[in-house]
Length: 187
Image (cartoon, rainbow, N blue to C red; front, side, top):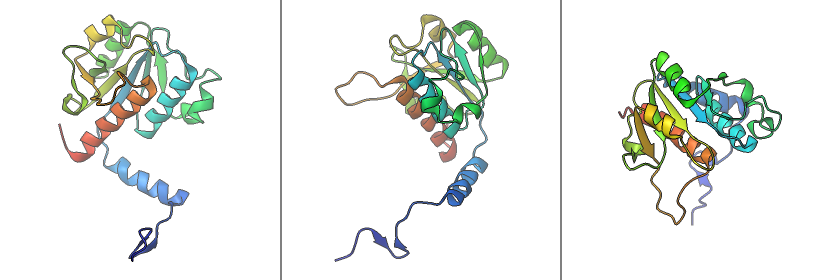
């Protein structure tokens, strides 16, 4: 019987830090689209820290804060961000409408991640080219003003018995899908 942990190359092992840097460099070379993130009224430090960490992982160029979103430099955010808060440029852009206007000035399409009647599944959303994803607060999601300003709205299909994801998890899923689509050459 064959040992499933062995391949023709020997046992599997985790990559060393130098190998991880090389792997990440290869993926960066395949990445050309600009990706920003607008975060409206996320107030829990651990959620913002997780959002920032995911933003750093997926190469978010700018983090736009709107409403009463907690700032990345809040001391409790750093507990979850684990130092990544210094890697993602951010600014508080005021209201959702003001943040959307700032996003448009950068030439980005704004796609809100929310459960609405006209939302399309995330895998069908217009994520090609330069895009800014938008997520809303923990309790109420994206505000009506943010939804009105969005070019498109997408939702994350779910088959379980839970109606929604935590905002930080939903953000990570959406950022990953935007990059996956780019890397796969899908519109």
